[in-house]
Image (cartoon, helix red, strand yellow):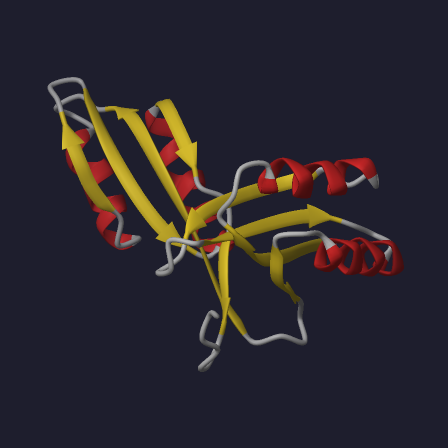
Length: 164
């Protein structure tokens, strides 16, 4: 089962390495990892998705994560938690004059944005939940993905929950 964990941490050297090492040291493979600063330049948010079958092992890892120095707050998003999650994918597609309009039409259906166009390629960015990204990629892949980059999951709890 996939689990999404968000950690609000101090924006300091080595914090990411300690967190990634803690998960790998306990036998978890990090599926996606996203790190970025918050509105406070002293803090960063790390969002991790892992596949874990044993809930007790994951709970223990989350408790150990919460005890790490420089970790301020840990949130485990689950089915019981109301949260918003999004991912960004950017891809460069082969686009001839014959296929360009069809690619643009698919992008519009998914509310994706065309961010660059050249005579033989097109770059699209698409944001959404995991299902939307998966469906978008299924339709767009036959056109020939030349390059792709994905952010991994970002998540925040619903409602007012201000960062410290």
